[in-house]
Structure formats: C-alpha cells, structure tokens
Length: 112
Length: 115
Image (cartoon, rainbow over all chains, first blue to last red; front, top):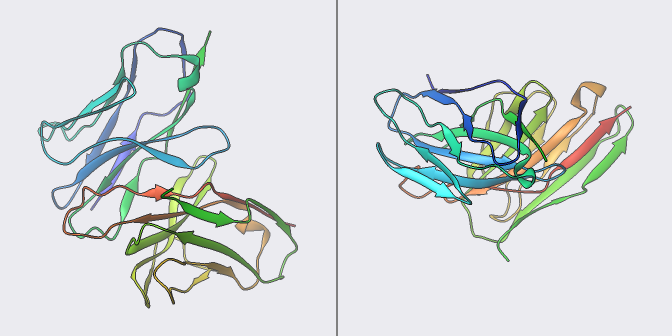
C-alpha cells in the first residue's frame, strides 16, 4: 500500500542550527513527494515538492531530495530561524492521483 | 488571489444540531477533499471528489456527508454532530491532470467544537 512515515517530534533546535526531518515512504506506483508546512493557527502550505527520482525540491532555504533507492525524502535546512517554528508534513501522491498520503507531522520549535 | 475559502473559521455547536461547513475554490480545480486533523493522528481524509457529482469516501467518512453540485464548492455536512467530531477541519483542492505532481491548496481550517 501507500504510506508515509515521519520522525516523531517535537524537534527543538537553537536558532542557526542544522535541521533534518526524516521522511520515508512506501508506494504502489511512482509517487510525487511533497513537504507541507503548517504555521500556528493556519492551514497547510506547500513548501516544496519533487516528482521523480533524484529531483531536489527547494524553497525558503529548505531542501529535500527524492531518493528512490532508500524511499526517502528528508527535509533539511542549513540554518533555522525562530520563524521556522511550525509543523511539517511529508506527503506523497501516486499516479491514480485521487489521494494524498500524509505523514503524522513533525513539530519544530526553534529557540532564540 | 488563488485560494480555498472555508467558513466558518470557528464553530461551537450542540450534539445533534445539523451543520454545514462551506468550502469554495477559485482555481477551477477538479479535485477537492476534506480532512480532519487531530492531535497525534495527523491528517485523515474524510471525503473527496474527483469532479462535479463524483464523490467518494476517504478513511473516516462516518457521520459526514458531502456534495459537489458545482465545481467550485464542496460543502461538508454533519447531519447529527457528536462530541467525537470535535476537530480541526481542512478543505483542499488540486488539479487532477495527468500528473501526480500537482500539490494541494488548503483552506485556513475550521475549528469545530461539539458539546
């Protein structure tokens, strides 16, 4: 079947620290992979995506590389800011495109 | 501005009193979906719609109804709300297209409390 597994949070970092949030997936087809971010009190926003193996999605200093061999799509940022504090969701969508599969979300707290 | 609009943002109601949460998108998206978000459970899909008059159950459809009479609107109906439907609800839409690379656009959410 299709599923997404994310590392459990919360993740607490100091400002300017390096961030990694792990995401692995299983998929019956050839999925597209996404990271969404949810700031407090808001809906989810698309952060970045990758549609084929070895693609790197990037946005706002965040990056994730589609690794087919390890079925992973880990989110990274070199230097986090307090404003990055949010919940991050990994997701996939497969070729029958009638459904997204979301991970359970990872809360990131960045302290000044 | 391209967006998904949900109303209301906050709603407190009593058990058994029918309610409707509206969702409207202005992007001509074919695909629309409702999710609920609960602590520790992430996002769970309630219903989705591939196009007008085409709807199907998601993972947690019990106690909910939807309709898709127009492309832009996808209301969520709770005929007889119960306290276990207290949650944060999100509507989302997407192009269907031929590629799964299209992402969702989400509404801002509706926080529902059933007492």
